[in-house]
Structure formats: C-alpha cells, structure tokens
Amino acid sequence: MIHTWAADITPLFQEECLRKYYLEAPEFRRKKADMLKHRQGKAQSIGVWALYAKMKEYFGLDGRETYNFSHSGDYVLCSVHTTGDLSALQPLVGCDVEKIQKCRTGLAKRFFCESEYRCIEEEEGEKQQEVFTRYWVLKESFIKAVRKGMSLPLDSFEICLGNPAELVRQPGEFQEKFYYMESELGDGTYRVAVCSTDRKIDADVRLIQLRV
Image (cartoon, rainbow, N blue to C red):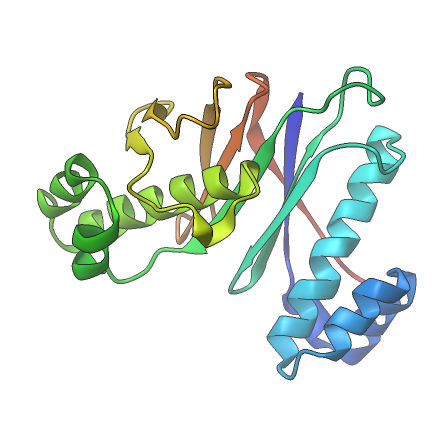
C-alpha cells in the first residue's frame, strides 16, 4: 500500500528547529541543504527527509522501500510503499504537491494534450487555476513515478480528470497499469497527486508536525 504524509515546514524557519532535524539527517542530505542559499529551500530539503524518517520509523521500514518526495511553498510531501515483500520488485510511485497557481494557458496549449488544454480553457478564474494545477501535479507525479523527469514530453501521456483521475494514454515503454490519488493541503490552497502501479493508495494525507 502507498501511504502519503505531509508537513508544514514553517517551524523549521526557526534555527533551533532546523538544527534539530539537520543533525538527524544523513551526511548527503545535510550537504544538499548546505548548498541551498534560501531559508525556505533548506527547510524543504531537511523537512522532507525528516518526514521520510518518521514514516520509516512508524511503518518499520528498512530503506529498501519505494518512496518519492515533493515540496512546494510551505509544505513537503512523501509517499512510501509500506507493505508486501520489500525484497521483491517494488511498485512505482511518484508524488507532487503544488500551491494553486496562476493558470499558464500558453504552457498548457504548447505542452499538454489537446483534450487537457480544452478542459482548462473551458474554465474561468479560480476554477481554471485549480484545474491547471490539478493537471500539473497529476503529470508531475507520473513522470516522477517512471523516473523520467522532464525528458518525458508532457503530451506523451493523457489524463482524464475524475474521482479518481485516470491515465487514459501512456507511453508505450510503460506497460504497467497506473493509479492516481488526489488530495488538498493548506485549506485547499495546495493540490496533491500520487501516482503508482500499486492500486492501493491511501486516500488520506496525514499531516505531521515538525517541532523541537
């Protein structure tokens, strides 16, 4: 099963709190955080690892599990495969969180599928912004699940919004069946999407407190 946890990183803007989780992080994660100039970036880097560490402890995981990170604004997100034989082939999993943003219709027209662009164009105002952001996190979670990043064209796979959203066309190199879960954070100001080849995706995103 895929479980997803999130955390508000604003407590890590305080040096004492950031230092606590920084010292608990592995050396490679501390080095990554050290390379980031801005306070928010450091808090995101350390905060998402702290979140993963809490999930490993809670579910009794040993590091062989499939997991994926995301962050946006004041939130970090982690999705983890927590059940089954962890020595066997693991399911693919990707997650994404984004603050609802101004609709970039030019980007959608150029890079999204025609049906997705039309769906966005049919809406107005805040609803259009929400639909655009939904497509964005759904697409990001898929390309993260297949580990292709932005090298995979966004119009090479097609998504139909629904409850749940459905991947109705996918690149031929990926034959697996993919499943989606969507949620919200920050009183609806952030959109979340999780994509996995494991059909069992917990629909609840657990909000964890990071404090001293």
